[in-house]
Length: 271
Image (cartoon, rainbow, N blue to C red; front, top):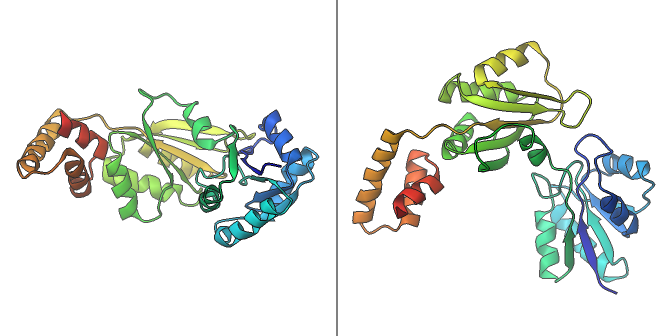
């Protein structure tokens, strides 16, 4: 009998946001690896799923790999991985486990389903399809600005916690200007879902008066490219080309030094 391991998305808020196939798979497997057994049990109870639960989170994922692989090879040949909410491996544990399963040539099947990133992006207007998702934004202002500079000309999406969001927004306002356009979503798919699209300064003022709760997703809209700044970049690219650097090396060097988008520099370098 073949061994199968499923990656199963779970609802990000509303428990009804699970697919028929996901329920069917979770009912068919021998065990389910999850972040928090208490959270997952609520979902399983709702859909009368009785599979065994194994905790597998960011603090024990490495040591759980051996146990899960042994289970799959010694009779419990169908398993699944879920996160507390959304799609596993998208800002959630699972990468280490999947790497080990691949080494063992175990058949991995990924199901489509709920994800906060795509739910958020499908609700807000954008000029193009390009975006950068960075997961949870770092706490330190310096690291935040490094990342946001890197994706200055790309819509930049990240998660943040309600108790840190105001500080993050203040850092954006301080370093990029209070008129920077952003979108903030909280409690996606839940009763009190809210999405605000405005300048960062206006959103700071709004949330200073309205308490923040729930999971937070943010998008900093891409800055418009300044022709004169591209002229300066092109001059630097020319100098590095004269020294024999390749477009790939040039994009790495200038993005590191100037905080500019690496892909944008590369496109200029090859043109």
